[in-house]
Image (cartoon, rainbow, N blue to C red; front, side, top):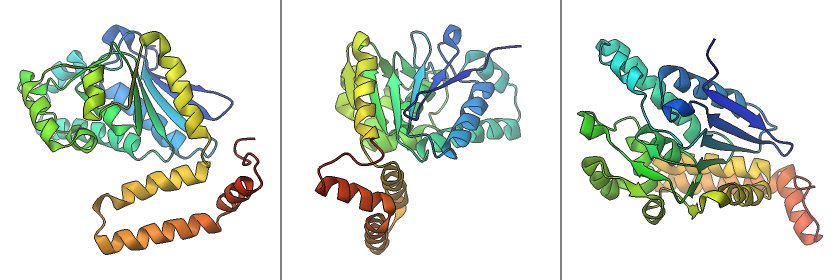
Length: 261
């Protein structure tokens, strides 16, 4: 029996780390990994004890994108089978994008194709200086279609037009300049940087963080009038919540709020 392609670890603070665990394949996607990651996200999304989610890769790569054997099999698929495969990938990326708690990509090495999509679907990305990024689909006669909405949201259409068409590799520094990642550190300092970012996340109220992320997702397609209604309701609800009252009281009383203690 083969090993599970996604490894799950949880610490005492409620931080869950999902590791793509196919190092011999540079953590490339296939249908099994996509299903395993989607199932893990769905399960963890309903667990109120989860405070934050870290996504990373085993070995020297974050994710090399699509697995070649999977692509070879897909080349023999009929249209209906290819459509089902593509929809499964989209559903997994959407589950990551809308995960109800903060998500952090720990980019430990190259992220190619769908791997870039994973980075873009996370809220925050911290990368090793040895990470590289590329969208190589056009070199294979394909289109970076399923990941396009997530990457476009992260770096904008103008940049996508170039990177999708040229299929060029960019280094971690350029990825930061373009907005794909937020921080770049030496490889030996990657875990320290991730821990520092998690410390910042865990300082926020768990319910407030979830509500903030939900609000931003809700506002993506809202009209101006809808935006005003949703934002005013959001702040009013948080002020009236037990967590909101505790946070304000802790600030005024110069003490730590309950979720930190």
